[in-house]
Structures are given as structure tokens and as C-alpha cells.
Image 1 (cartoon, helix red, strand yellow):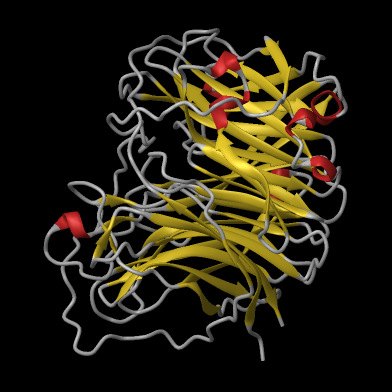
Image 2 (cartoon, rainbow, N blue to C red):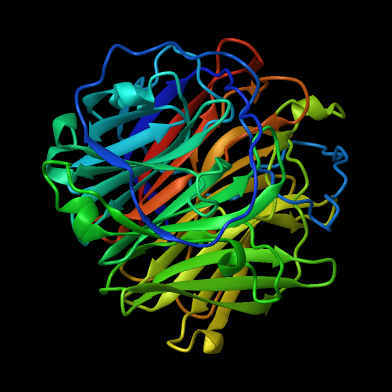
Length: 529
């Protein structure tokens, strides 16, 4: 019988506050390849500056969707329903990561597991742990890596582990009221706890528009055997309109093989017309795929485009041809989807301030199993698992890319759902047997916001086996209106035991009352048996 067992657990206590909103910016420009203006070596963290409470940062909600969000009405539930799952055992350490400093809401847990260490980040801090959860590097503010980042605000960290080169990569955004930047930090796995071996690459966030300083939002990062890619959604400052999706691609040789952190990193940039959908509409959130297995040189990205009458999964491929970055794309019809309804959590009532935001139809995670030539993606959509009101459910896709991209096919699409429970913010990866792992957030009127995981066996079926990873403890209540909860999670194949996958999520943390404004980021190493 298949089960999900937890072998390693690492948790972090987080308090919440908010960050400032960027202010105005401007006009279009051509695609260009540029060199990064400057690059600096990592160093020991400085004394940490205080966070500045203000209004929430731009959440990158994106262009208006033509599909109406399903109306959220309270369900009539007799006795609380519990999912028929097997609860994994947990070994390891519950450790404070973030400390008392005010951070942002929602929690954005990310991280990756390497051969000897785990690099984890939440919102504005990063730390390093061993594989039992013991702290190796005291978590510190991202902006404290360099005095050149002083006075800027950090947001949206993403971490991956590159098993092809035994390297962690951390990407995050920094900005002030007039300008935004992208930071890419390489962290050698063998010396992850020594920041003097980290290298940081800094670039303006609006590479497409020739320095017109638009706000680069919601980054994703992916890699192949020879390149690293960062994608962003670019907006005008001061809650300006969505402009375009941006792609920044970098060669690993320049990014990784530079112990002195002194070489300029050449980058290839695409945006504007190059990142429009095959039908000419603006693509939104090109989710870059991380990879495992094989020796891939093609970088894949995935987006989901929903119209009033149809839905298409758009597959993107980046390929270097004669020194030029070539973008190919193809749209594949899939089952029609709609915006997920806002989610319930324990103690939810008719008052929207007790609900949580399950997101929109952007793809929140993508993964390429290069050994099997399978590309996966997942997001939250509207569904119905119990025959009553709609829930927010996880929709996942499996595609087989073809060398002639237009001949690619969507092999499977499935749903992870539970009656009277709302699921969102999935992160995905496969193990070496091709089993798909999905980590996600879940809540319901009888369940506080929790961390869950599911597995789907390789092959033709779509049945999901689910298990609770970490149960939420109180109703999350940060501010007025629908509560923001997560923008993403993380997952990666374990390089030591490739049958295992690490998932990173968050759960609502009890503070001694029925409501809480704190959460813990939670890391679990899962095995499918």
C-alpha cells in the first residue's frame, strides 16, 4: 500500500507585518541581451536592520480575468468531516527561524534539500540547516547581504537545488518606491553555511524596457544542465498595469564557476512580443521548471490561459541556437477551469475577513522530469469534491514535450480535492520512479490552515493519495478582508534518496487564542512507499 512518511521536519515561527508599495514607472522597449551591471561576493550578515511596517507590497494579481470568481457561501456542515488519510509520523526538530522581527503577510515558504544541508527562506530571511533540522547558519535578512541593498525592501525569495552542479540558487526581489531589482545568489552545497562562498548577481528588474524601472513581480526560477532562468511579471509602479512577462536567462559557467565573484554574467532577456501567447494575448506568469534526471539543455516554462469558453495550457521552450536565445511556444487545449473560490478555514463565517485567498489561475509550480521527458505544472482552480458548494482544488497537468514543440501532448490532467476543504498554492516534483508529489495548503470550516501532500503514481491513472503533513492550530487573522495566505510553496527531489521529495509549506500557528497572525513555515521530506 502506498503511504507518505515524513522523515525530516524543519519548522519556523514567523510574525507578520507589511512592506511598502512601489511608485510610478513607464514605457515599452525592445528585447535585448545585456550584461549584469555589477556582482559582489557574499559575506557575513551585517547587523540586521528593522523592517518598516507599511502597506502590503504589490501582490501581482495580474490582468483582470474574464472568468468570475465563484461566489463563496458558507456550507451547511453537520458533524465536521475528516479526510480519510494516513497521517505521517514526524521526526526532526521544530526550530525558530525568523525570530521576532516583523515580516510580510502572507508567508512565502521556499527552500530545497541538498546532500548535506537544507537552504530555506521565508519572505525576507534565509537560513541553512542540516538534514535533521539543526541550524547551521543563523537566519538573516536578505538585504543584509550587502550594504548596496541598504534601504531597499526584499520580497518573494525562491530557492532551488541544482543536482547537476551541486549548487543551491536563491533568487529574490528588492525595491524602493521608484526602482526594483532582481538578486540571484549562488550557494555552493558543500559550503552552504559559509556566506563568504556565496556569490550575488544584481540586475535591474525591467531589463526589457531599457531601464524604465517597472516593478518585476512574482519571480520563478528554473535550470537545465547549462543555464539558469528567472522569470517575472512586470508592472508599472504604484499598482500600475501589467506590462509583460519577462525572461532572463544566464549561463551556468559564468554564474557558478567564479569563486572570486568578480566576473560579469552575460544574460539573455526576452519579453514584450516574445512572451505573448500563440494567439497574441499577453502571457501571465511563465512558471519556469526546475529539473531532475537526464541531462536537459532545453528550459521549459508553463502558463495557463483561461478564457470564458476554453482553457489552454501553454508550453514554452528556451533553446540556445548559435548563441541566441530562441523562444518557442505552443498552446494545448485542456479541460475548462474557473477561478477558485476563496477558502474557508477553522472558524470561517459569512464574514469575508475569515476566509483565505486561494489565488488566481497562474501556474504556481512547474517541474521537468528529464529522465522520463515529462513536464508537470499545477495551480488552484474551482472544483466540486462533495456535491455541495464549490471548493478550491488543485489541478495538475502532465505533458510530453516534443522536439517539434507543436507536436507536444498533454498526457494527463487530474485533481487533488476533498469535500468541504479548500486547497491551493501547490508545489510539485517527481521522484526517480516518476511518482508525482504535490505539496499544498488546505483549510476548511472544520480545519485550520494546514500543510498537506499528495502522490499520483506514474502511468495512466490520476488517483491521488493524500496525507496530512502538519495540522494548522488556529484561524489565521492578519487584517481586514480576505486573508492572504501564501503565494507559493516549494518541492524538490532529494539528491540522497531520489525516491523522496522535500515539500515546503506553512501552517497557522497557535498563539493562545482561537485566532492568530503568525504562521510556521514547515519542511518535510516525504517518501512514497
